[in-house]
Length: 395
Image (tube, rainbow, N blue to C red; front, side, top):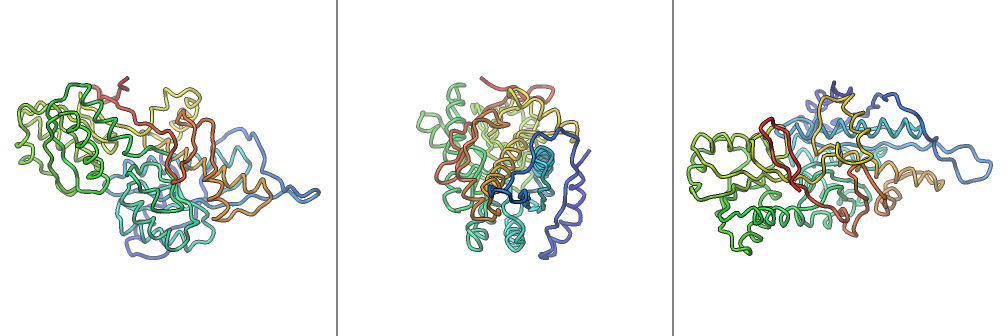
């Protein structure tokens, strides 16, 4: 069943479409039953009243639009993280949600709306690198102390552009070489690369192409807009000796259409998709996809978190747990501010986020950030799609 906050998206998206400042509404998520393990932090002043730690954190992502499969799961994981945190700490942190619809202009508009809401201390999101770039320019110009943690933007170098930007996934500086090395190890001799003309896609395609050519693999490079859904002519140009078709795309449904049209023309090359194709919308058996997060069902200590999530929400994917990780980073940063007897604001919360040093996380790995805000020590994973649509981790 979908979270109560999902229903707000209908009204939200209608208002956002009119570019109204009312595009973001404050909501409180319903709290699932859980055992409270700790109370709120108290002021360090002897004899003072217990300090009430209050905060509002935003979620900004593609709840509707062409990649709603990402946004809905990410929103659900944010709500899940918030509910567990409030139960655990005895707090009543609030949230606002903003639907970018995977649109760069809308992302900028919503970023300004979040800045204008003085109660919002930080945000999880946006999802895509282009949307992060659009929102980031607004945050940087309006208040560099506004922290936003992307749970799925992978473009190389983007965190260095904005003071408040961090991410809980590795960058394409890892995805590109990881992909190319795997293809070389698989014996690929001729690779057909098609980018989708987004900055995410072209940048990643450039890295993979350079790595493959450096390994003496023949590369044919093509480009097609995200709005295109008839790939028959392009598919017809794939040479018979092509071993791999590499699609660094963001719209997974388009990847499935491409695969179907390859089958119609009896093209036998295997598709390898970037993290954008790691979705239930892409199910071509035998294909490979890269993922910036592991399957947490296999992460020791995260099984119960996953089980609890699936009791409340119908499905998940690898785009969800990095949201939980990002939300937890922000919540713990706010808690540390409160524990120091200070009132949380954008500046002191950002300082605590930058100082994050978690020994472990829902992802099974530590979380800390480089000076630029990148995830320290992140890595990509490769999965192969099976006949039943499930994915198997490739060792």
